[in-house]
Length: 157
Image 1: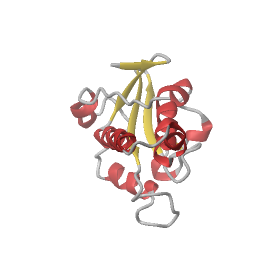
Image 2 (image 1 turned 30 degrees about the vertical axis):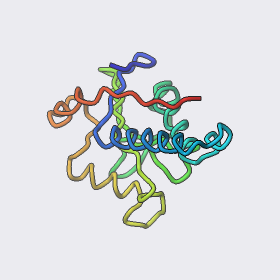
Image 3 (image 1 turned 45 degrees about the vertical axis):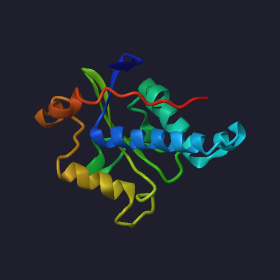
Image 4 (image 1 turned 180 degrees about the vertical axis):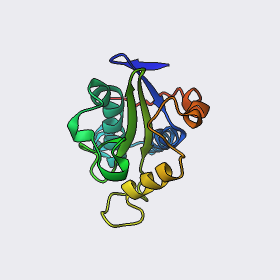
């Protein structure tokens, strides 16, 4: 169980799998025998560090920050984008119980491009409309996966 700022941090399978992919890419980069400077400057390493910091520090410090709020169909969800360039991290949270549910992080095939079918907002909207993800930790569908993904996401400094 991971907690930060009294929030229980949980991950949906989509987010979990994406962090696994990021970690696997970091391992592949290390196997290429890149220098520490080359590793530090690699876009994948930079993205992983920013996602890690957002997930374990920035978002738990204030998951209801106005910068994270969405509108329209997605107004019950939040997204983090600062420093992620064309990537978006979507999450839901509850103040009672204090849970942050990390739901989705797009990949390089679904980079942010307004109007595109592969835009991360459109991809996330599909998941919401299909009820694959939800913002409500008491939703019976969420209960199926809420306990399944107690994950660790590691980025070495």
